[in-house]
Image 1 (cartoon, protein in one colour):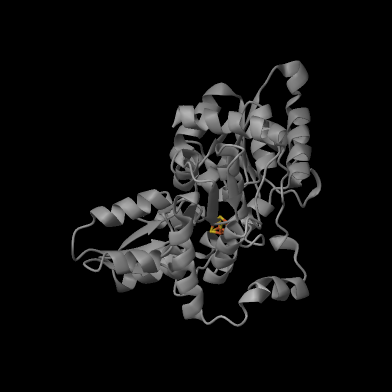
Image 2: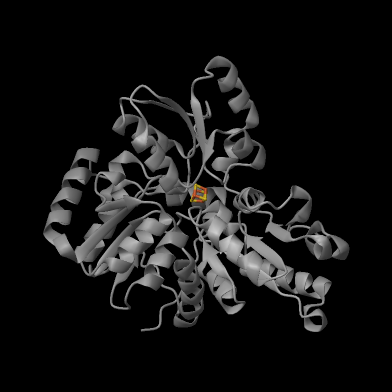
Length: 383
Ligand code: SF4
């Protein structure tokens, strides 16, 4: 079966569309919240092994309550890969559902309850812009005559098309858990690293591997030639894409400074999508799984300020009442695109499975899948 990709328009919606798209499915207007919850319970029981519900850590509690598995994007992709369920409802964002679709058989369907749940970071790297940058970097390095090699690495938070691009060009995918290993491999196998879409994960990891900030430059797709001269491209060891996560970029060095002066005994732990200053000033830095396992292992009475998405921070605070867990930021660092998945949308997906109409199925074409899997397999071999 040939699958075709459905690209979310979340990043480009007009105000009118945003309002319309935030509305729950019309057929649920008359249902109270309790009725929605009861029907989800009923349908989940009825459909039983036909459906697997996956919930990303950043989802809200009322959605997580129905998840068969909860985790970060890689954990959930693996969970989808292992599952035999005919229908997988991915309560996360678009690129995660795409990855799950590529890792499952063509007889299984992966559904995203709300197609507008995209990722602003993933949307910052469009295929045609990355291809243009690749060409400009290759020209600056004169790869045809010099024999020099650029290795592309993409963070898993990107479209399937970009994963395929990386697969074709001999690169690999990484997650925040294995970025160090993958980047190390890339640096051993090429003269220059091209990393996208998250500049912060790239910079933080490369710095940890001993690369100085002077050896890294940022390619901004909105500027002519990425805002770089040929000389700057030639000289740099690492070229970072100008992309970022709007949630993690919300954590500021001033918040760390305030905490240090008010509560010096509170440890600060942050995600590597936070900026360089913040990750350097924190006590601990690491992926979502690292944050979860560190808090799990923490002694009773210890105190933490956490720099990651607020739904996860609040859930961890409830789960581990013997330790004091607060958000590093006094503002709500909320992933607004994850936030779009509400119980009503989940119910809509379950009803559509029952009615055999299966709405909002995410599919990736075979060619894209083939090249993306090559890049994913490289990652899995190296992890
Ligand atoms: S938290 Fe950031 S990177 Fe993760 S889905 Fe939301 S916008 Fe994308």
